Length: 216
Image (tube, rainbow, N blue to C red; front, top):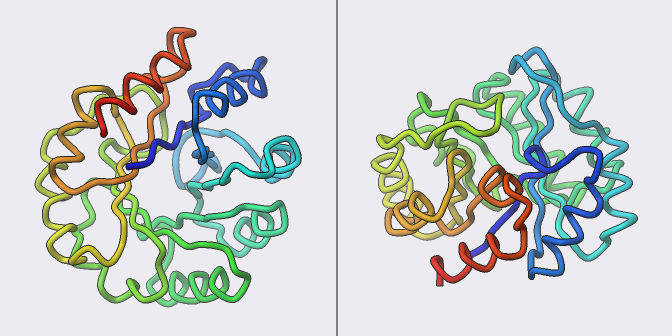
């Protein structure tokens, strides 16, 4: 089981300190939400933040959740910035484009993930599975932090687990807390993106320790 804190919900004016607190608490991966204001109605971080992050925390995996329908602009930029893993949305491009950019990531030795929004069926996964390192199932609609976990996504996690037959890890993102993480784990998830739950009350280390214990 792996916890990937989403820095979208960290304090932007205290970002390095919040990340450092998570790292000291045992985190080995950070989830960085990239929103372009077009594919989703919000804006967040850019390549410079990822470059700065890798300079400050070179041993911590930079997981980039790319919420953009401009992969030709952003995928090369985040590869150059030092991203360790880039997750592309199935809904953001055609199947041919998606295949092209997954190949690009494979060729540039950057791990590849495929993101499915809540309304996208898991039956799209097998076509791309050979080029993937993991699958991310959104348990809220992408675009904003602090949303509530959508209960019907549990069935989707179960279906993805059956379909993938253990060949790829399943990550969940959206509304993850002590209760929903445990439910998602039981359904087959093994990577958990948590934002407001970890960064929302100033008790970062304690929240990570609590979630870690629940997921043992």
